[in-house]
Length: 456
Image 1 (cartoon, rainbow, N blue to C red):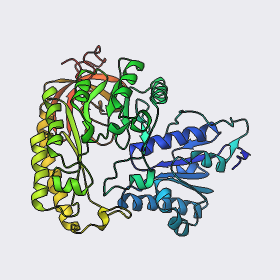
Image 2 (cartoon, rainbow, N blue to C red):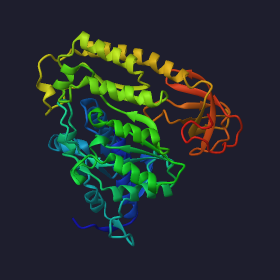
Image 3 (cartoon, rainbow, N blue to C red):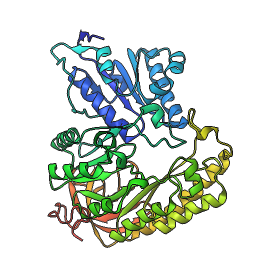
Image 4 (cartoon, rainbow, N blue to C red):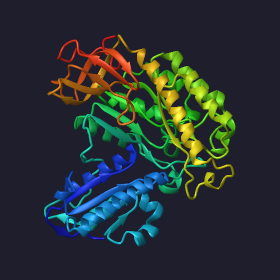
């Protein structure tokens, strides 16, 4: 398709779903901007509505379809000229959606960004060459905290998961290209890089013949400034080794924070999920991290109501959370997804049972999170400021314990004059649920001490 030449087009951009999708959206925004388009945060300012979709589970599919219908309503009212739907939902359901959503003007699958640019055309005078790793800024982008996606797809094939169906097999981004992108993000203001992928521990296996996440981290450590946070998200427990934990313990850039989605702790359920049933290894990973650093922050994801799950098997999950002292938990109720093996399994758990187990799990985890938070009372933590309220002389930010969007925050009682994106060392006064409350010894950021724990 050959791009047409035209005047500037205002594009209202909606990015749905996970952090990996956010990276795709920023890359697409960068391409659209380079072609002379303007990304706007309000649909009333736009000629084109564009949505980059998520289709991981049915709840997400419904949410995305509702968002597309909202864009169709705006088009019916004459407030939008065109609608573009891109991303995972197109990969998964394009044929059906074309019939149900006739007002959509263009459909594009994941990574088909150049086709969208060609569809919209280019402003006269803009470059005909698509940029490299340059990423645009969306309304929700915080320049000081950015995601770095290390690859696409997955080779694990968990029996409940649609990712290989939607995104395909593992395709890692070469180390040199990731280092280049990381430098670019730092140059544009990033102080925290959150590495994301379907499974970071598998990174590089397709390119280098073996998992190479540690080699990537070593390259990033050498290339990035000293005052930098690197956060790891989504690590499969099977490939976390003693050497890797030793490396993390010695790093002054990679945060003592691991997001290890175990999904379950019963060996029979794990086997049915097509995950390793080696429960002893999972326990050892969490215990080893705790032995190295009692303040290591551990996050996991738990699925409740997988087919065949009994009350006794669910109780093992609750016992594990307490035993491993998990700081953060993301839980979700199993959803039978079309095309997955688990959807055809016997023993589907009733929705009311899933809901009851989910509620119990989150209630138990809330108490554990409270106990973990209380360990930090009286300590000083380095905080990356997110928002300020000068009127109330307050602010909040995140410590090494807090990943963007999914974890708690640190409230700063006298931080109204702070600047979002700045560092500050805060004295923790109280813990409440998933959050910490602090005050600042003074209003000037203290000299840099320990990169994670501030001055303590």
